[in-house]
Image (cartoon, one colour):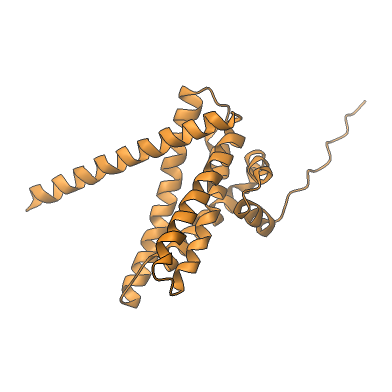
Length: 190
């Protein structure tokens, strides 16, 4: 007797997943955590959100400055995605007994960057509201991060918040250490 293959599971198209991530729909994070084929889509969200952040967040005075800033934002976006996922994975799985592998967490955290697409509104003449936009994007991104971590690591919301707080603090500490080393190296080069 042969077993019947399991029916293919329906997957939302990329635009639907992107909108769901923007709406902070927890089901999309669970979906991409299980979908090994979603890595390209997660990378696409990181690329789009980095582009949006570059376009709306950089106050350039020339085209060259703008293009250079956008390229830098995309590179930093991808490096940050890879590194922050590693830190969160080490904390969540290593210290707090979450259950996930690195690629699964990488996919969910890629989609968690979707709120950064709202940086495109930064091209509008917002004046003092620009700071409000930044705060709203920061809060939405943190909420998406907690949802993504909760789904990928299969932990409670409290543990997901703890993982994210420890991850953000570790990221700040690493950034400070790298910045200090670069500053010391530049000082020694003079």
